[in-house]
Length: 272
Ligand code: KIV
Image 1 (cartoon, rainbow, N blue to C red):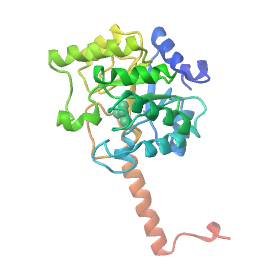
Image 2 (cartoon, protein in one colour):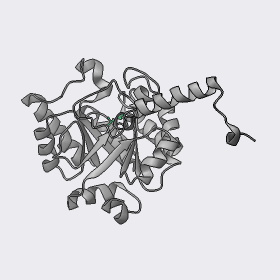
Image 3 (cartoon, protein in one colour):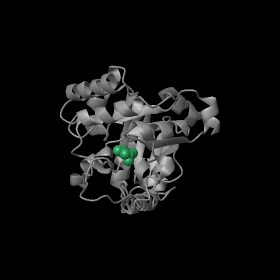
Image 4 (tube, protein in one colour):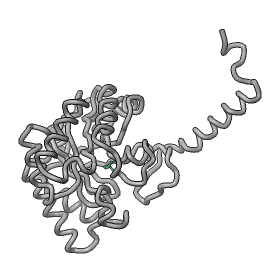
């Protein structure tokens, strides 16, 4: 059991800010369903992100764009039913907040009411400032997301590292300061140079959770299916695989099929 797990019975947005103050790193993983979320929560992971990466790993879409608000609510409600300790953050999906602040607030309210999640995450900085403010004014905690923002993939045209040039790095720092100023409780920084990410983490008092952003930030997040090796074709440098479940599961399924076809399963002790 981690030190943090013993100390914090239930993770809140304030816990995360306190953890940053104390120099304690924050662990965050995605989850999209009850069974996985139960395991993640019981392992002492601080934050569960119901990410719109569900669009990729659960639904098989190429991008995060197709997933709907209803589908995000379904995933988030399943996760919330499983958790006892982790903070549950839910992504606002593409199209549910970009058009105007009122729509953004309506979407965030639906997530909070219908799923029971504890906070929402939105991608972007200055462009979505009014939406973030409106959501925060309604009492809903917001996590920001800067750097590589997959909902804008067709604008970027590629999933390569962001903010390598000074102009984009400066904008990212400005956006991080802005999100802190208006009241976000944390920021995800995706696929940016480690030095820049560390600079951001040092400049702001709210936690910076990195994915492909080096070790100088306040915590790390990975997509669950990637870190347990259920996906095997996605191999970015930042990904550490803790299991090779693709191979283990495939072997198990192959063996099961063999056992069924050979008549070996079920045996005497496996029937009534
Ligand atoms: O949707 C997601 O899984 C995310 C993480 C990559 C941070 O936003």
